[in-house]
Image 1: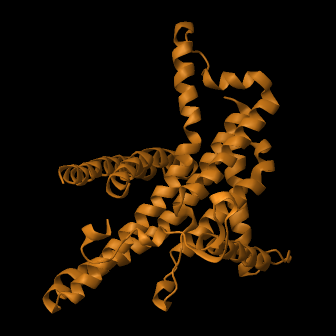
Image 2 (image 1 turned 180 degrees about the vertical axis):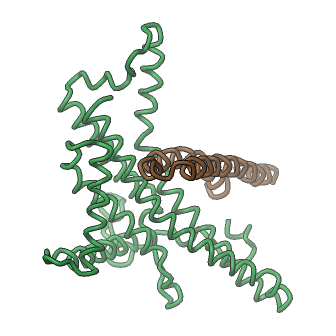
Image 3 (image 1 turned 60 degrees about the vertical axis):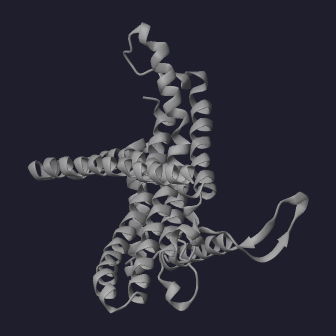
Length: 261
Length: 74
């Protein structure tokens, strides 16, 4: 694809996983400390600092503690509202998912490319989002079968379905249940990938416009730079929305497992 | 070369799906705003449903984007 761009600017290059340190190849595979690992650890460190700063349990909370408490309160409220009082015990899981996705998204958007470093969005890989989606899906399966035993299958037959419709509806509901982890993973992965590709495409317009001379610079670079500013703002919004949607849908799926319907 | 051309045209056609999803997402937020302006007290309680509708609709546009990516880079 790089040759089709005709300029050597490849918007997909930012998603390349490169080994940074050590390459251990057991049986043909490769296990190394990659840039993906690095940015996951950075997200972990950022979350750690954020939480440590806010977990001082002061009687009169400061600004930092208020920020942390509003995030935990937000997730707590989300679960209580969507799952009910039984949802309280899932707060640690949903909170972990939410804050990791949020921080990974935001760290990937950091403008440290100016300093020559390359930010890497961990959540722009379906492997990462897929693992998180499968975790949500497994929790639903385990909780559902643990709590309701085989009655869990009534989830696939809505109340008041006429008897001839049961087999058809069962199949439809089963398919819609089975695609949940895929849709959950795909949504986050593509939203991040598409946003970053868009930003890079505008950035390459900007650079090529300047290189092509002052007229083109004025005609192409200036509008694309303005658009890039707005798209960046939109991307920050999308980071939050996608983290929220992932947490919300996980909570709704857990609601199915806890309460059937 | 014809296969290459067909791939590029197909990737362009996949963008129609993204546009259609944009119309859907716009309709959802527009409808929410209409309802919220008529009854502002009830608006906050419906925000979760708004985001569910948004997520489900947006997914279809994103799938169109996936098809575009697969055609271009796959």
